[in-house]
Image (cartoon, rainbow, N blue to C red; front, side, top):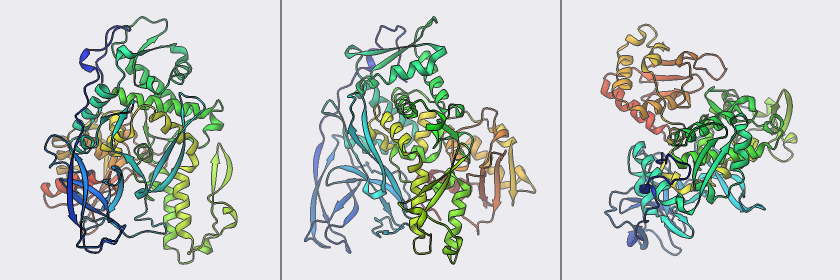
Length: 572
């Protein structure tokens, strides 16, 4: 977090002033041979100077012909830069598009090449979508408006540089290099340094005093934050609780962020609900307009701004969200499997339709019945959906409509405001270095995990039921978790198995499952014939752990499973 002054009227330490941005990049010309099988106007991926780039084959050029393009490189050695999240071949990854220098999602096949198979129809295994937020100028100059939609993942793009006042302050080559900083700690430190030294408004150019009454904290905070322009969101804030003695040297700011986010995420407020699969993860209440009739959308814009400001200032928020919310913030691909964490029972119901010989006999139509505070409301998933029967022929469209409705459309107005508020503060290109699990850790902090409590309230099934924690593989598992995994990797293991890094305040003894009942952490022993890698069942807080022959094999397979859980890669 930024170093804070001990006075409301004094700037922070001089070392946090805006630094001089790096020198403009050098441009380097590359010459490549068009690979076999590539057609004119078709995209193909390659490594240029260590960077994964996306090139479009020019018209009238075929395989074997040479083409040229330019890329910016840093003044330092750029040969080690490679834009990727994990060195796993099969899955979605971001690459740079040389035509306009924007980051774009591509899906890689098992050979490490771009999967050029175009899925004209929805496919539960391969189809993915990302949110697209189109910014518009609103009537109030302090607030932008925007239009939110879901597009196929390879159609979305993000700028690869950041500008401030019309001048580039963070270049593509820096962001690409930050991808390769390795650890979560290194990437988060780089992000924080950029926010503080290059994007934060200097004290001498203006700063904000936030005076709030503790008894009216949320009301006063909304009035204050929503009166600010976007530039004000990047100024240094000083907090004062009216009527209380105390100088904001950082403690009051931490308390303010904790209290206001706690209030917004409180289910009694009516804006958010606990996820059906994990009581620690919050989801937007589709009926928030009914639960919170005082312009509920203002609260979501406010919360988005507060979360963005917390991230910008290195503060923490008090509330974990469901997985696809972090994906929406990052513009990360969402897939059919994300429905499982949103509504496991409905996900299983939809999945079962893929095994039905005659779907038409199920008497379904393109509607969904929404429960709004005890009142059933029939929602059409497409225009005239109540008059369209679901058949084997249109089943892909029915599944696609459900994915789009459950993961975006049912809360689109609220999500739009949350994202608009968030990006009033944080430039989206900077977040491309993180995956959605890292974003949760960055916003909520690394949890303090009591390993003894974790072990005490773990149950064992399958191959491990007889011996429990005394089973050889389980002994290896806990030894690795306790003595080899660092705090971040333990948090990622929790995310892998339970869907969130959050730990209940009363410990693992009250960990809940998707039905609201206590479902303790479970290690289920399976044969390696069933799966080579550990598999997670987040709805039941269960990990299927194969019976490995050595501790080294367990370490390798567990590390890969945890690492790839954020990428959507297939590790079978």
